[in-house]
Length: 181
Image: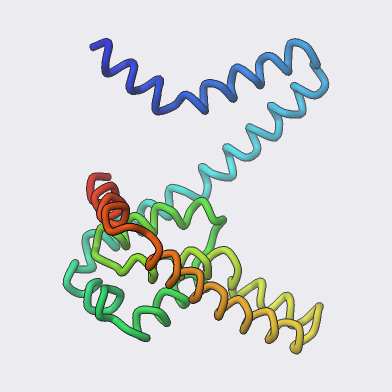
């Protein structure tokens, strides 16, 4: 029983540290601590409004999309189709970047190529469709196109080289970790 509790404490040690830090700030600096708790509560509510729909969609993706289908379209031999699909998934997705990591886990579990998952994460963080439309209307079409082209090239290069530079053992550990969750 003690090892189970120790694992729980170890797993959530950062959370417990932040709670203790928030309490200490509240005690020693009440105005700052109060504002910190308000911001923490606000962020928690925002996360709780975003994560449940994403987890529902991930559950549906996990059940409805067969592993063979995912491997065909985003696996090692997917080629340009996998890259384009990864860019589309990341660009069309809604929500903050922390919501992309459970999606990445499911993609890895289903057999997606690691570089395609990296591309999806990069696209999620930089090429959102609403952001592109905002840039085009407020900063101009030329700026938006230059940034978009540079982002697409940069994301693809970073994803490709990151996958190539990782040792095979680490890549296998990433896939193993994703399948164990």
